[in-house]
Image (cartoon, helix red, strand yellow):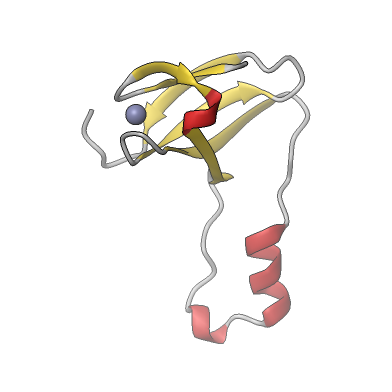
Length: 88
Ligand SMILES: [Zn+2]
């Protein structure tokens, strides 16, 4: 089992985490004016880079979202950080 370091709680089992979104994706606005195709692309299509990737994850135990940087090939966790604007 893989373990991820929550920036608030420390190292925990992967079963305590849920992938949210690739970091850096901007929500299209205004949402009411966005086409169905563009909204679908925003919700369901990911770049899924091979190698280092920055992703937003939720730690289900503490309820905090954070950025996890990991290598998608080696599964190495490169680092974690709180979302911008969230105090540690
Ligand atoms: Zn946590």
